[in-house]
Image (cartoon, rainbow, N blue to C red; front, side, top):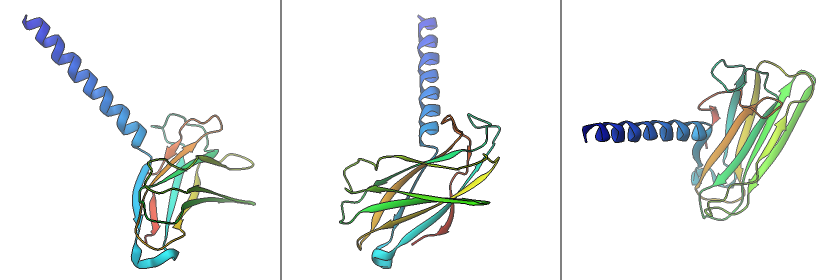
Amino acid sequence: MKLNKNIKTTLLSSIIIIATSYTSTVLAHDYTDSLKAAFGASATDLYRIDCSQDAGAASQSPTHQLFIQINDGSAAGGKLSATASVFTPGFGKALTVTDPTGGDGVASPSKLLTVIGADQQDNQFFIAVSHSATGLKNYELSYHCQDASGQHTGTSLPPAILQNQ
């Protein structure tokens, strides 16, 4: 009987450890913040994401692209958007994702911002979060640095906050 109790305890502990590890991996690249009502419809948060060939990442290949998605957690009116950009020698590119319906629990479609030309060991991406109406907007920004095959490369956690409105 005592052996059964030990097996159950060990099994339960293992399940908790695995579940906790999985959850932190999935949520590791999500950042929650808000656009404050005091700044009106022009409120903009600006972040820098540093991508690298990190030994602890799933891939040690050069960063090729940034996965981006945004979820508007507020039911207040207006659309919430995130614009990602990258600038490397001789190259610049930007794209925007928009969550048109706030507070519904459904994030924007995801997009990939790809670095054209030779992959680099390290890339910096910039993300500007803005909205089209006044009022407080809570949001969750999902981002992942990836190699050419979609595997995770080193990603700064949390992102560097350059402007917080």
